[in-house]
Image 1 (cartoon, helix red, strand yellow):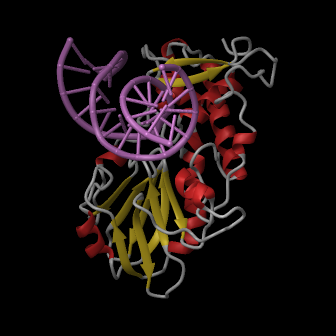
Image 2 (cartoon, rainbow, N blue to C red):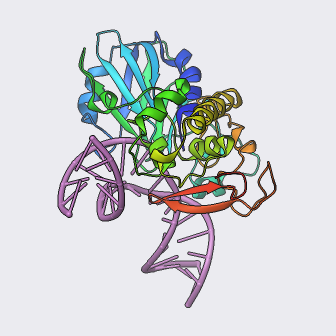
Image 3 (tube, rainbow, N blue to C red):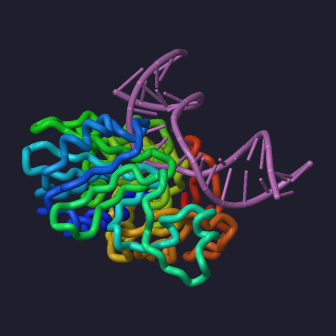
Length: 291
DNA sequence: ACCGCACCCTGAGCGC
DNA sequence: TGCGCTCAGGGTGCGG
């Protein structure tokens, strides 16, 4: 699932394919939960425009258009933003995968889950946004408009500061992991990196946030920064659907300590990693290292 | 203000 | 083989 590192890797690698190129054609699917802006309107309005800058805010991507408006993108759970020249089995459904000749590396053909295809005036590679579960989002923002989703976001998780998190967690009775997942508290952390950072910090995900000490918050902030930076370096985590815009897999999943490692030995102490359900989400931790 | 939970969506995996 | 069930989860919004 795309979290800050996957979104940042996507930003860095899609930027050269997007910035400065005039959009000549826009293909969308029909109106749905996916579109915050009606797709027909969106298509009409961005044709002829070019993205000038592409920035990341938490797990959102914001492309500044040359007419002052902006294109807001969120990858949700299964969103994939990639070049038409990319090729990866992760871009295919299992049925489509099975139908492939063994060893064949055919180019990606847009399917019913491909909600946005941008063609450019220069005739080069297209930029495509595919999202099977449609938890992702696309919106066109007016000049100067700050979308409420962006207005709500807390500080970017790459700059997590222990003192700040400590102060803002006082009196909070929710589990510390739940607070880390709250994008208004800290923007960019999702299920994988919350579990990883808490393991590095030696703090159990189920602890009441308000009872986590200043020293522990320092370690959590440090852990958050460390796992996010390291994952960006590794190209993100390709556990289920994530592929970089060029079709390559990330490698951070190979380094993860506890996430989706239920029953395996803790890399620090060899105790068996446990899974608990917290706020309807799975949390993984080491019962010996994390208190 | 805070917290818990239903909801949006679809593919995969499983039991029968 | 195939159906139906359950699970996965980011973010929003509502009710208590």
